Length: 373
Ligand code: SF4
Image (spheres, rainbow, N blue to C red):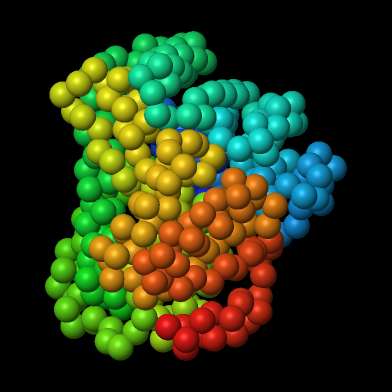
């Protein structure tokens, strides 16, 4: 699809895109690693929030700082900054999620060479009024930290404008997901993955215009390209830095029609109330959004959510995409699998350490799984 070319540039050649943006607009660029980063506040400050993914050819430099049993996302992100691949960043923000990310924050602060460093220490339990008040305070503090770092004031008007734009983007992404769910084949899994990643990196105003073009194109083409006789799958996990996985699924006669990933649906779920106090409203979205396993709401919350989504989307099977050494997702897996078993949805667990892994090794397992659905 030719509308996707600009997204390819942002994902395949991020340095080129970001340096050009900086030269033309003099904007600051702030890196982040987690979908719990309140990026609307970064955007309101005038800076571009830029999500760092786990892509690197090796982890030679990172291995001097991190144990081999850290997840590849942490090791590869660190490798990128140590090898000067993220020099266009003015700073980075770390949200409190798992132990690996907390420790990576300290190592990053000391070794990245970037001028700015922020920690957003969100509560781990998102199930009480006091946790919500704490989260609101954390968001206010983050706003103050950005104001001090950039020597400016972030006004309520700027926050409201950013909130409005993010709501439009999230609605657009939701709509795209619904088109994909209703017309699998209209857009491939790899293309959808590309759009989601670009959503977390690209100038957000430009991104919004571009996905509207994609949407117009899809609405014209969707019913014609609707694939038939395939198995409907959901991907479950944190990040999925293996875009070739989608091709393997499609080759096996299935299609990913939904996901529960932090680089997927968790990124766009929940809109922000545009009529409330902006910071409280931002905090409320992160408080109420579907949680990831690094957060806690209720022991059954994630399992019940996954089973419900699987039923709603007429899912035939689930693929768990787990990064090796990712404890939060590994601990979550047995409970989620039980919930899916109870509603009769078979699942396959793929553990991936190296995102550059030859997909052939996974292809056979995916084919066998799809065949038995
Ligand atoms: S949640 Fe898992 S994948 Fe994400 S940073 Fe932590 S250990 Fe790595």
